[in-house]
Length: 387
Image (cartoon, rainbow, N blue to C red; front, side, top):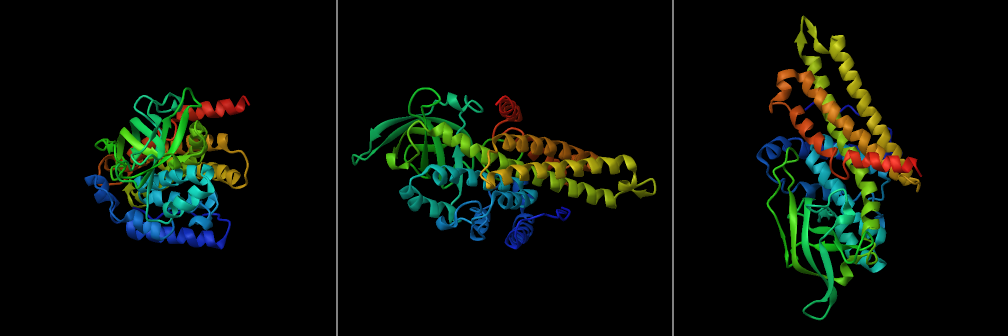
């Protein structure tokens, strides 16, 4: 893998130091083992503990609860650096941040004091459980039910029955944000903070995916699992509001991951073009290929600028929902185009697993699908234009 060539404009010296730390860890811990784990489809034991110890799993959250207190502008660039070395790990870090959002934004003071420090402390990894087999983009169609009930000791709570799908880190995570139906219609969804090891909760076998092989994606099966009422986040029926507020931030995370993948593909393509010769000169000196690389660089730079604009709006307390969808759309489409072009630059070698660009291309595809497909992003953007 070629060294990354990003010259970042950051708001503080602390942010520069954080990027340097991230690069050091990513280059020493992630880059040397990514190929073997992705090819063997094996889980990277200890990787998230290392990231957690360095404080890289809780950057955008308040320091009072153990977070890094960093603006989203900085957090996303850290995430991009991680994803440029290992997209599956970058996605999992983004999902973990997404999974901490409901408690941080909608939890009571008591709930935050009780659970948030451990969730942000670096020793736990979280997952997000919104989609179902028949309800992906249409979250209002959720069927998994949470029925009010009493536990064995008379504790108030809910019995949950149903299936959730497409859970990143399913079966490996320490906690899950579950969205389940407690009433009718779109206002009948509630949010719960579910601990790992809950009685009545099991997971399916990992999905056989095109990419992101090292981190499992599974279904979850709730068979009368009892969740105490104290683990409901927000009011009953507030679930979709919570889910959608988190998804705006999650879409920015995926945009940053996509830019990381695209940057890695660009750098590998440039390095190859500077080494490979044809007709007596480096292939980068041939205008047709040089212009292709220029378009790739422009796409990466534009995508990064787009997600940073949305992040800065978020940091400033401005509305950023449409900008988040724009960033997710632009960045993931750019990643798909740039990685495809990187394969083209390497020619036949790019189509083999001896070079990483074919993996980047496979990984880029999923970024156009999860956290809302790019067709859904266009729907969000068009509705924003209609006011």
